[in-house]
Image (tube, rainbow, N blue to C red):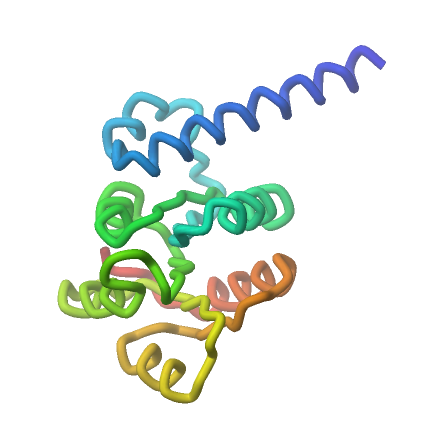
Length: 171
């Protein structure tokens, strides 16, 4: 019983740390936080995923599921400039990108990645998976277009598939 209580307390503390980290990432303090939290947040054995979506509720649920059930180290960015900064600082293996980000949108991020020569496996998440969106996304370098809503298990399976076939990324 005491051991089980300790495990629950440890999970609670880790949850608070993840929550704090996510809030700092949202505020654009990405590189500074990485160096301050290095011993606690870096998980070299876990694949790094960058989730970029401005919907806080959706992002929180997906972030927790990817971390707990997929075993990934997940970073979160709400806006376009945070995506580019996080890629520079944390070098994720896969980018989960919402097409309807505020300001210029997910397609703008795809264009920036392509212009800067990044070859990062990207899953574009969209509520409107039209043929035009799929065509434009793949032309800009998206590996896959994932229609919303989706189950977190389906996303985990797609990420694992991409990780198996993905060449090393250039950041």
